[in-house]
Image (tube, rainbow, N blue to C red):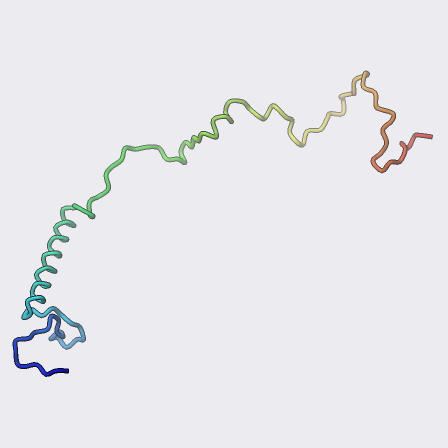
Length: 125
């Protein structure tokens, strides 16, 4: 590394004078001084934006009130369900015929039916 003459070279960053291993801006270098000024200006602008609630710190706009979806859910696929009741179309699955109902006299069971195994009816000769 070449040796430098005793010119006025100052690094942009230098070690902190407080004995830590951190580096700080060097105000003796023009670039370091510009970085110090820019950092202070950015800090002041952000503090103003926060205090005035401007820019990214602006509260959201108030929207008009609307009811929650959970309060009165209306969906387009629910419209047809309210037109007619399905409860009266079919009997419930646990419905059984009552014992006092007798079959009508014009219903005659078919004599040619056989059980599913192909065996003749039990009363057949």
